[in-house]
Image 1 (cartoon, one colour):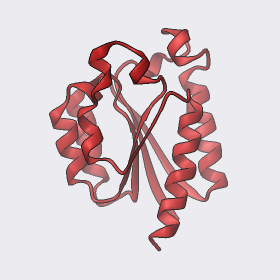
Image 2 (cartoon, one colour):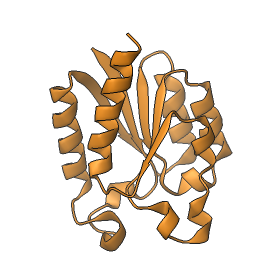
Image 3 (cartoon, helix red, strand yellow):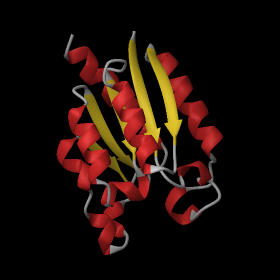
Image 4 (spheres, rainbow, N blue to C red):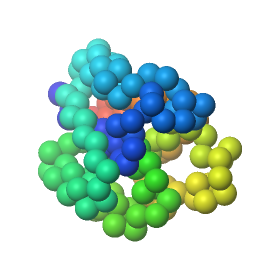
Length: 147
């Protein structure tokens, strides 16, 4: 059974409350529940983490190096600013999927560039929290291809 880590960055713990036009009305607990359910269906072991602190996200990524087959990361605002998170992801040798709930290309100009995109396997953006389900399905497929 493959172990997958989902990392959610700053302010994602407040989905359902903040900018519902961008992030929808479902809350973070709902997101956790649907990810757990989908992971169980796919026979994946799931660990979910959320942090508003850049250094904690780096620590989470580093601790996954020898423990996880893949990372799904929604780094939130750090996607556009954090060289440290990018460097930690670059060290991770498994599959990495970058995820954005909103379409970053329909938002402010500064959100159009993601620093972490250059080191990830693939990117999902603009499909709401359903993007997490798509990311889990994709992760499952890619892990099975690599067996």
